[in-house]
Structures are given as structure tokens and as C-alpha cells.
Length: 344
Ligand SMILES: O=C(O)[C@H]1NCC[C@@H]1O
Image 1 (spheres, rainbow, N blue to C red):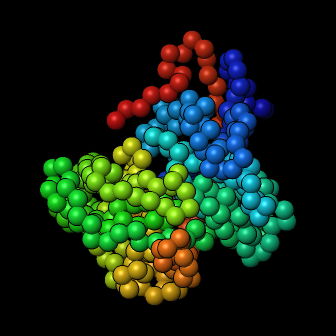
Image 2: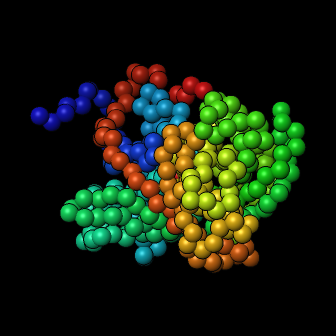
């Protein structure tokens, strides 16, 4: 029996829900209006200016929640891209999202956005706002599995920067780029443990750091001003020296949103930082663990490159995504809460 939708006016929005290491990804399937713009970055500006109400409908309660994450598939201007994508969260639109790339790799193969799938891996070129990301999706017996991706050039932007953080005084940290900029600090500096402390305390410390860096450090990116902003702060367990054991971190991004996964773009930025400091070598793989759920990604630097004048590396990140369901959302005109709300 086909699922009947309740009476409603206007379009229905269909989505496929997935998660990667516990971090949700709501992939918009249909119902979203045409996105104008001649590049993925200009499309990102367009949705922010003209279609932001739909982000609130799909990310906020009652259809989503404070920490919901979404992906909108768009056309890319790059001939080598299989798809373009815009990412959305509780505050706006990010420039890179590794957990989403891992999920979208599977999605693109399963939903036939790429031609003939190949075994043992199918390549899916995903044009993210930060640039082209190459995903490789395990494929065998008609089934998709784990995904690894090669991200855009990642680089340490600044190390040992001291900022004044409200409530904590002077804090020394590193800033690194993995498709988005993150500040990195050892959670110990705040008397916290990324795997054991209360999430609320980790969020408060990370948010205070983010605010401090935003107001005290000017970021720039060699290819576009659209990329030059601090996306969040990653608190770590400080285990940056190479080890075969996992190292844990927790990423607090956008508006105090907590990543349940080890953060694909964060792992990219962290590997670039470790490589810059001489703590890991090319092709030395490390396991990164989410402080919130314990889920794991692996990450390694695979090639040296440049990004403008920055010495950069190409980082490979690998993980696994799962489907959780599909939904069809409607809006009733007399529902005062239909546009979405958030509880902090
Ligand atoms: O895996 C990632 O890169 C992302 N997860 C949520 C925050 C980041 O965009």
C-alpha cells in the first residue's frame, strides 16, 4: 500500500536519511526549488539569500533537531564532477563535510547518480563548495559499503596562536584547513576529557574558543573569500604523535552544533597539522575516534601539494555510512510552527 500523505498545500519535500558514525545526513531528494548560480559557490550564496526558509523547515524541529545536518544535490560547473552538493546545518551552509561525502558516495551509487558502478570500488567525484572531492565507494555483489575520499588540499594555517578566551584566559591553539577552517586545542587545557566529560561542558569550552578566534584572528584562503571563516573548534585528547592507537576528538561547529562522527573535514585538517609538525609521515594511517559516540574514521596524508603559498597535503579519510529511512515532509498553512524552531 502506498503511504498516503496527509492533506496539505504546496510541495512535499522528500528526503533520504543516513548517518555516518552517528552524525545524521538528510539528503534532499525532491521538492526543493531550482537553485540559481553558475558555480557551486554562487549556488551556496543563492540558497543563503533566497531559500534559507527551507533549511529551517528541514533542519529545525519538528522535522529535524538542533544537531541535524543536510545535503542538497546541485549541478556542478566542473565537467569531471558526478554531482555538486551544498551542505546545511543549524546556522547556515558549510564549505566541506566529510561525513556527508562518505554518505553521499554510497547514495550516489545506490541512487544511480553515476554511470556503471565498478567493483571493488566505484569513483564518485563530488563537487563540494570547497572544491572537488574524490570519493571511492566499495561496491561488490550489487552492494555499496565503506567509502574513502581524497579531499581538497589541506594545510596548517597557523600554529601556536594565543587568543584570550572568555572565562578561560589566554589559550594557545592551532588553526588548520581541511575544506573548512578549525581551531584545535587539547581538551586538557580546560580540565576536560573528550571521551568522558559532559558534552555540555565540551561545547561551552569549544564555543568560547570559536568566538575568541573569530574576533581575534583574521583568516584567509588562497582561492576564495567564501572559504575564509572559522567553522568550529575541535577539542582533542592531545595524542598527536603517531601511534597505532586511536586518537579522540570532538568537533563543535556552526552554532554550537556537536558532530557525532570523528569529523571528516576535521580529520583532514588534523592530519595536515600533524604532518606539518612532523608527527606523521606520508601514508601513515591513523584512527580518529569521535569523543561523543566512539565511531571511527581513518586518515592519512597521501601526497604533498600546494594551496596558494601554503605547503599543503592531500588527505584520505575513510569511514562507513548507513541508511536510516526516508521521509516525505509537508507544511500545513495553519501550523504556526511549520517553519521550524530550535531549542538550545
Ligand atoms: O565530517 C565532517 O566534515 C562534518 N560533520 C559535521 C561537521 C563537518 O562538516
